[in-house]
Structures are given as structure tokens and as C-alpha cells.
Amino acid sequence: MSDLISIASMLDEDKRASLQNFSENLPQNSQKLPTEAPRSKRDIVSRVAYLIGIDDKYFGIGIPENMNPHFYRSVYDELNQDKEARIVRHLCILRTKIQRNFRAIFTEMNSDIKNIDAIPDLVPQESLQSLERDGISFVRAKRRLEDYIVDVHNYLLPHVPNCQKFMPDWIKWFYIKNLFFINKGNTVDGNKEAARLYNEFRDLFPYQAYINWYPDEGDGNILRDDAKFLPLLYEHNHDRFYDMSKVTDAGDAAMNDPEEFFAKASRVFVAIDCENADPCKVIGIMKDFDARGLLDKITKILLVDDEHTSSQWRALRRNEKLPLEYYMTDRVKDEKSAVDVAMTIKFYREIAQAQAEGNPIDSAVIISSDCDFWPLIELTPEVKFLVMLEYDNCSQAYYQRLQNNDIPFFYIDEFFMSGNVELKTEVVLQEVIREIEDNHLSKLNLFSVINRALLKLDLKMTEAEITQFLEKYITVMSIGFAKNGSAVLQNKPTLKY
Image (cartoon, rainbow, N blue to C red; front, top):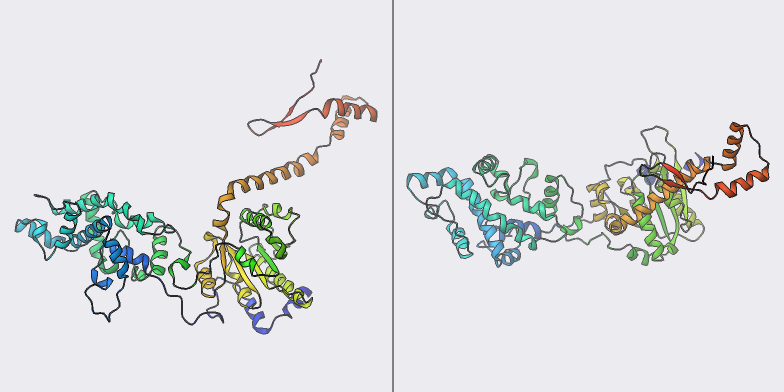
């Protein structure tokens, strides 16, 4: 209790109040928050908009100069120079028009015996002509309307993949590609179901252009900008998009290399949340720090653990090169961890002590994906922070808070991916050796085994005889392992009786 009081006395009233509430609901206001939120880019949505056939006017074509286009004209001009992109665009335009006007087109084709190229008010002739110029003979004699819409799907199959080159590598292309392909699109029934969905929720589709999408009123305009579109796209594919820095005009707070941060730091304090960090990845980080000489700037590595965390942390604790302080928290309630509070208090103690000794800590690394540490970052402006986190464990709200406040962060997923197998092997091997030595070999004492054998056989040996017996017959044996994992004795002496 005395520790809690001494730390609390270091904080002003506002800090103490903020530190009492650690939750997923991050504070809405921040002294560092810019007056304007980062503007989202529209590069990706402009490319998608072109390919799915959204009208030219939304790219600024044919509208007054004082009206702002929704998408980038430069993207339109770029893609319009490519044959594959043009083919996909005009096929999508035709599909949308056929689905929207199916009944009217069907009537014209069957009552007035017209083909699809003779109904300009319902079917865009410029799309048919563009496809013809690019080698797609879309119009055929005696073709049913429902067969034409199947033709769209079949023509898209070979051409959509050729448009991957227009999307950056950091986007999962598979999610984009799926927007163009209807489930069972090579059948009439599959297209009928798609048309039913489209006409029922037409206003919810982006600019009323058909895509393979299950619209939701809460989505709004999914092509408003890249920052809205990509998280929704990933969510529809049961995934999450994290790197918002790639879709905003604001500076990218994500670092490519932690060495940039260390180069500007004098004394660095590292705090590791064992509950919200992968031990294998953290061990990899520390190995790299050591290899690059970054450990020299680290004053201390605080490892705050909980009884329910992985035993892999032992491997890090055994590294004698690290200036490590290990702290195990106790749980008052089984369901409630105290790691975040303990780590915060010990962090402030370290900062205050260094300040009192006249050797202040100017930089800190927090290795945790837990947003509960945001108040710690916000309320310690005298320290420059680097947050190391993982894609799958970081909330979107925390990511955006770090981004908006220019707090550099680093994804240890990408950093550690290349060495994962080697390090995993090493960590597992360390734990297996520890398990064998601590739980099995430590219980095996050969003198005790010999004495038990003598007792069972009602025989006696002098101490010298036992020592000679051990050296001549026992120590030459070794322990091996069968295919089922069982231990077996090897090099056993040959027995005459």
C-alpha cells in the first residue's frame, strides 16, 4: 500500500483521476489531437469506382469546374488507357443496366424482336462499342437476355485478375476481386438471385452500381473514401484492416524500423505487458536489439507478468544480457488482472526516480496491444513513446488514437515474421530442456536408485564398490527416445545371467 501512496503523490489530481479508469472507451479529447482529423485519400475508391462502372460525371467529366468530383480524374485517365480495365468497366456497366432495366429490356427484345444493341435508351451503346473495339463481341444473334448477363460473368472471369496491377500490394486483392463475381454467376439462377437483391436494395449499392455485396443501411456510401471503404471491405470478409496510415493524407506514424526511434533517444525505458504481447515475438525483438547494439540505450526492461500468461516468458527472463526487472502480479479476483495498473505505477516510479537522480529518461517503449495504456502515454508528455503492437490484438480505436496524436508505433508481426520458425524452435527447445531437467532428471538420483536395488535384493555394497559400479556400468549408458516419445536406456551393458 505504501508503494501506491508514494506513486500517487507524484501525480497531480488530473493524472490520478485519469489513471483510475482504464477501459476500451478511450478518452475523447486529447491535448495533442489536431484541430482537423487526417483527410482520407480516395485513390483506392477511385480505382474501384472506375472498374465497377460508376458514371463519368463522378470523376469530374462533363460537370462544371466549380463542382468537386467524388473521385480522382487522374485515376480515370490512367485506367482508361488500359484495355483490361476498360473491358472490366464496360462489362460492369452493362451488368448494372441489365439488372436495373431487366423487365423493360426483356419486353423490347421479345415483343419488338430487338437485340440488345438496338435499345440505346436502356442499354448503353458506348459500352457495347468499347467492348467491340477491345475484342469482345458481346452482341450475338438470337441471344436471350438472361444469357447475356451470364455472358458478363464469363467475360469478367479472365479480365478482372489482370486489373490487380492497379491495386497496391498491401491490399488483399482477393477481397477486391470478389466484388466482381456473383455466387453461381455462370448460371441464370445465380444471376436472378443477384438481381433480386440488387433491385430490393438498389439505393444502398455505391452510386447504384452493382457489386457482389450485401448492403447494410448503416454502411452509407461505402466508396466515400479509402478510410471508410477498406475497413468495410475487410469486415465483409471476416477480417480487419488496421493500417489507416496508408489511406490518410496525414503523416504516417507507423515506423518501418525501431532504430529510427532509438537514434533520437538518450535513455530508453522498456515496459512489457505479458498479458498483451506475444512472448515469442518479443524475444525476437530483444535478440534484434542486441544484434544492433540498441540495448546500450535501454536503462531497464520491465516485464510485468500474470500467473495466467504463457510460460514462454521464462526464455526472455533467462537472457542475462538484458537489464531486466521481472514483476509478477497477484490477482485479488480470478477474473481480474492487475497487470495494467501495476505496469503504470512502476512506470511512473521509474520515471520519477530517474528524474530525482538527475538522469531523466527521455524515451519509453511500451510493448502491448492494450489500449488501457493510452492515458499513460497522454499524461506523460515529457517522455517520447514508441508503441509496439500486433495487428490482430490492437483495436481500431487505439490505432486511430495513436495515429491522430503522432505517437509512433511498430507492428512486431511484420518485423518478426521472417525469423518465426527458428525462434519458435529455440523457445520450445529451451522449455523442453527445462521440463526434462526440472521435472524428471532432478528427481533421478543414481545413488538412490542403486541403494533401492540393493535393498530389494537384500545385498550390500561398500561406498567404494558403489562408486566403481556407477562408473563402470551406469555412466556408460545414455537415455534415448522411442518414436512414441518414451525414454529408453541405450548402451546397456551385456548381462551374462
